[in-house]
Length: 392
Ligand code: FAD
Ligand code: DHB
Image 1: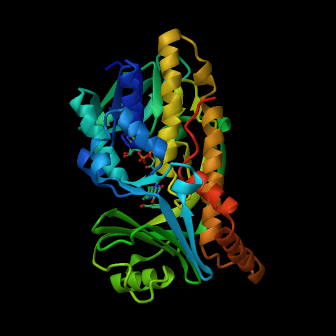
Image 2: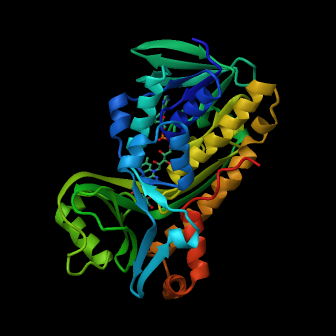
Image 3: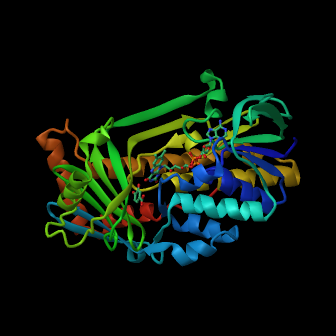
């Protein structure tokens, strides 16, 4: 097989990239190690920034998103001192976020890709690359027990944090920046009435978040140990902690119901620099992960490949590689802003066991300040709705 851009991974990064390249007349092939069914069911993030929603529409994949996406014009942050309402619409004139599950984005992009005759190989696992420093790099992969090769002009490593792409870059080229927070998130999906708006909480017992996936489907999280044993969290304890931390004492706001899914997510920031080596370009979680607080992971993946698609388009149109050369530098500026913001929100909203009384006071004072200052809430809002996708 031969293609212009070989894309490893059919997560948001790989799928958005494929659609943008196709729109610009560039041929590409997607290799995905898992089955279609598996990736369409994998529950992960769920908050789309305005620019990500716009991209779905520009790519002709936004029809179901318009019908089923849930616009969120405000977020609510609860703590012992009160409720901080961050009115996104008012503070960032006209901007909001939309709640729509990542697996729905993936489903819509795959359906549109296949409908347009795009090539995607499922259960095709990239094993490694050859010739990354040549003009004809190739991908070795295994499918149905057979090994094969795709020759490309470029390779896009969109294979997530545990993929092969980042590891294919020689160690002496990369600098790794890493911060592991001393807690995790226990996330559930439940057939239950959600809170009516996105609600975060800082409580003595720890962080909590009430989100949703539909009018009758709740997506809730509670702070837990990083290596939490799920056996310690029977359903009743999860609901108790959610009511308590979200200050729903009367149990009247948050509905309870059957828990369909329960899993622990680590809270970690990681960035690799640079995000490119020879003709291999890393995008999304393959290059960086952010703590989930603030829901930036999926949107960052979309922002990276937005820059990458424009760089590939320039190259194939004109032969110029200025944008390709600057890819890492341009992406990393936005990536670090998202790391900063997600780390800030994480530090603001979680309980840190090692905090001294002084540090806890500072945390609560920061929340008090947000409660009283429109300027402080504006910086939360501006980042929550997402910084612009830009490539200069
Ligand atoms: P991915 O979505 O990881 O896609 C990579 C794809 O590559 C996968 O489909 C994988 O199967 C495939 N792949 C891997 N290796 C190979 C290979 N060798 N060959 C071929 N294919 C390969 N973010 C939030 O903002 N909020 C959240 O609540 C949240 N929850 C999360 C929960 C979990 C368990 C995880 C892992 C992540 C979560 N994230 C969350 C982060 C967010 O989902 C990611 O930032 C987003 O998925 C990044 O998209 P991506 O396309 O870069 O990577
Ligand atoms: C969701 C996830 C997040 O990380 C977040 O900050 C808000 C909402 C969600 O899964 O809906």
